[in-house]
Image 1 (cartoon, rainbow over the protein chains, first blue to last red):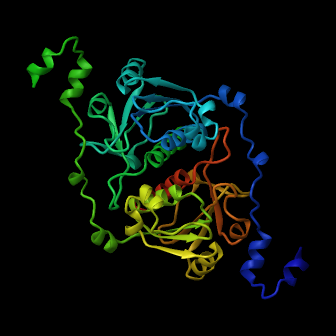
Image 2: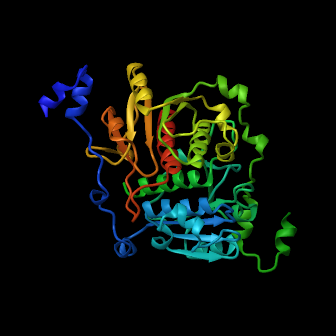
Image 3: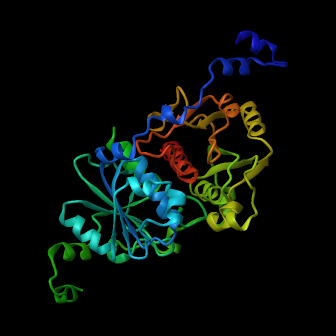
Length: 198
Length: 198
């Protein structure tokens, strides 16, 4: 090993240092992911996602893939949100549409009223008056949260917002008005997962 | 207003409560986003993104949109990563490809060696031996970070990993091996932004 390094022409000390401390990429086997059967039995975090009329199948697929990674209990596909199976959802979800539990509801209001009655805290992901900035919010590990993500253009419908316990907002300082749904979902699901697993 | 509420058939107290505390969605004007000119002058956070051979134009567009929202200083598009302008990038970036500074490099190694010489801390976003879990990492506000995001299939190239100061890993517990690039980018950029702005 040392001989090999010394043989490299023009070898500099930083390279020598880095090669000695080489960070090897993990193989898929080493990642030790659960099988579909193991995953189904794994305890999930107290988090469900309500998709309020999401148009893009790419966004839906991405929400499934993120929900699989962070142990989301269930995804509610509402209104125009296309449920699996669908080749376009599969292209992004890569099979996570089979591992994550889901249900279709004609309206997000159906999912909201049922979850509300079952004691879930309903949270809109939206830029509203009195919204709480995501970085300032610490989830209560004793509670269960249902997060509503809204349509690509219209956002979360006002009727749904009116039934929320509160809204979370991802603070943004750019020229654009919002983030992609799949990115917003990733950020908020990670926020809940990382704090609920602490 | 009160009369209207009382007239709703089967009206329940929670509805009454919610309507009284209605959270109004903010208008685009109320979001008070900067113009392109104002944004260009806004101080950015000490963060650049190196895209190592990203194939999907959707992922590239999404990285631009997220970088706009969280004040990323620059995006380096390397190897097969297509630079703007491109209609497919625009479809996802929605103009953020004009607000965020960018540069094309033939190889990510060019960007890495230059940034390294300029004193940037080079960070691979990858699952490697000795990687640091994202939730455990707090960025040093006095430092500047260059994050490398790798190809959709191959991840960050080992040659680039070898030049990293360290690697950050987004812990995942699902059946899939990784998250979408655009979601990973969203989570790590948000992690740096929210902690560097604290």
